[in-house]
Length: 425
Ligand SMILES: [Zn+2]
Image (cartoon, rainbow, N blue to C red; front, top):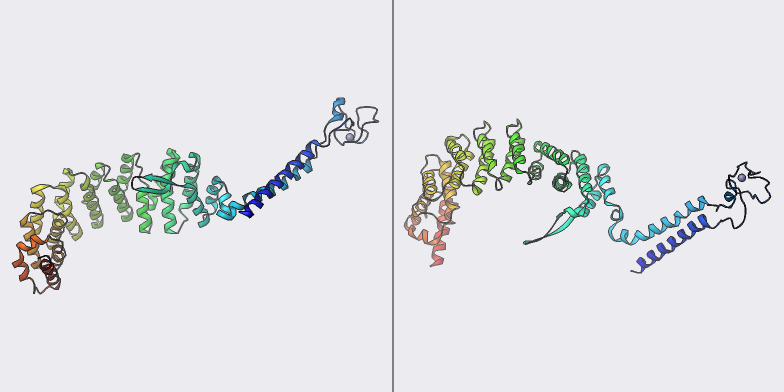
């Protein structure tokens, strides 16, 4: 507090000295009746003509002999105490928040173009972060009012320039995040499309986190159709990373638009199993929000004999989401009876995530503890622990017969639930 006071008075005195010096330099040396040559200030008191005997300058009018002499050197020198004053005035702020804090935001944004050290990046973060009150609490993130519109555009350009040579993954992801806001707040169509373009190049990045963050932040929620169309264009890209990133991006938009489904359905016949799987996964996400998707339903049905286990597994749950009521449980029941162990295990998973099940399904789940396939038994052992006590009581005889099952997982699960039933009684 005391030192702050000293800085401020020092700054005030310096500014006052500066003002005095400037005043003296410009206004003190007036004519006061003296006649002087306006070029060399030689006294013209005894001159016989308008021509100066010293320098040869000829005045046009007698008034010119009475001009005030301005001392420009001193005027310039008067800025020195002013600079000192400015230096002293910012010291309290510099001590509190560092030198960066007194740099204007525009300068910090320009600095980013030539110098993206942590210090500059942290300072930009401070400059653009605002607090938004929300019904779930208050959040800190870039808010529109923190910068002028042209500054948002400028920041977008600066970040675009730095993105490629930023090798720290977390900073690179932060740049993606900022770009999304610059794109929204900058309100420039050209900047927006440049940002979209640059972020889509990130889809091919070797780092998974960077790919994922690009798929999140390149979405333009103000023009979802355009974003979906752009993602759809990348679905037949030759690089698997890019295809899967585009699928992820569509999955992200699935809750908002059913339009994502059609391009994904086409991928279900893709030759790359991982691409088929990811497409199916995205469709399954869409199925949570849009139940009626006949084209997707038929395409998923056709995956029954897919060579990829994960695809066949996920197919069961994807279909379950697209069905309801009796059809849903008929589907799960037929999965539980499938000759394919992958499908049987998938049927168990689909059954257990639904809290209210028909009695015959509960019974099939208990029977699956004795399945011939190891992985089905393992899934059943995990599932059975989540089944309610009164359902188990109905089948307690069967459960007791599994108490000494040769499969350790089954034994453990059965002993665990039988123990729990006894505690409940
Ligand atoms: Zn002269």
